[in-house]
Length: 155
Image 1: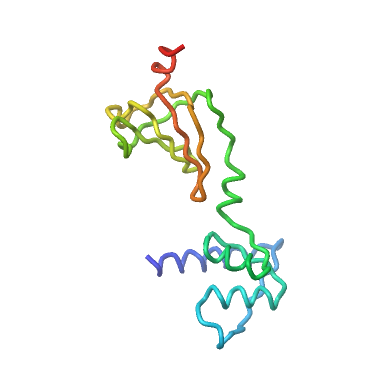
Image 2: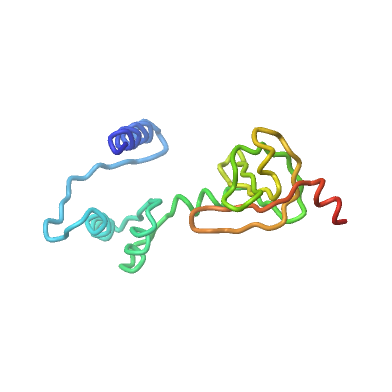
């Protein structure tokens, strides 16, 4: 798995290097007195007066504490996701059971998880739902909803 991630990273880096709009410089600096990759990355960013681009929560916090500017990929991705508000209706496909009794789980195209009350028995079916609440977490956003027919009965 690590090897595949490494290859993917190298492929992305190769693609970025070929882009005419981005200047990428590969440096061979080491900090032998510093142990751990995170510490070395923070030291290099400080030395080069550079920003760190990461999705690693701990690296993000360590860098910020040491005055290094961080661009968090997860925060950027979350900021780009469309806003979903309580009361909004959508059609989703229930793909698995939820953790709580009776829940079904669906996903938006961007990977956002949608928990649907009373949808456990509707696996692999497309259903209309009404958003009841949205929870933003460090790992992403979760949308809680109920079946539209249940919401209609309440009103």
